[in-house]
Amino acid sequence: MDNTYQVGDLIYEASIYDGMNTSLADLEFYLRWLPKNKNARILELCCGTGRLTLPIAAAGYSITGVDYTPSMLAQAKTKATEAGLEIEFIEADIRTLDLPEQYDLIFIPFNSIHHLYHNEDLFQAFAAVKKHLKAGGLFLLDCFNPNLQFMVDTEKGLRKIADYRTSDGRHIEIQETMHYDRRTQINHIKWHYSINGQFDSIQNLDMRLFFPQELDAYLKWNGFTISHKFGSFEEEEFQAQSDKQILICQ
Image (cartoon, rainbow, N blue to C red):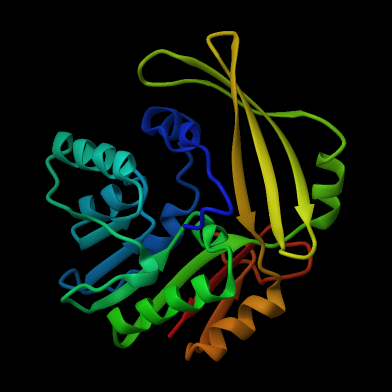
């Protein structure tokens, strides 16, 4: 969402993305927080290839998925068709989102706010959420709790983070390095891809980090009340050592 920072094309190549991101550890959490009324309208921002969108639709909810990347949406639409699900997918920038509907629940899952690199980007996205959220509706999001020691250790050299096969039969190995910029709070991650045993490319994955007190303040400044903050999808209390920040807001 900012040409200054980058997410490499290969990272969002649909079959490579899906092969790496198979975990549904967050699905049960989001399902628990959906309205009991199946007539409720749900909006997922940064839906990707529909990893959460499809099972929520399969549970009987009316859900709309929004994403910025055409290839990811194309994969989501294909998977929805194959599953016999009717889901509206919209290509849009969440900072300038302007839909004719309001929703009972809006969520931004899977650490996606880390790609809102400047405060203005985040505030614009929050304003779009407020615009589309019904009175009394819920806004949910999850992101990392920054671990500076982990980032320092990772700067020391390559570490393997993935080894898998895609649905089209490619063997993917990914090694990672990172460098954290304390001024911008951008973690500059580089993923070194090997495909079928041959080095392919180095892909950038820049992520803006949000510290706990900072993120809470930004939500409050933008008109949200935080009703719950968890440190895991099992709804453990948020603590200093928590890997995640998971927020329930109104």
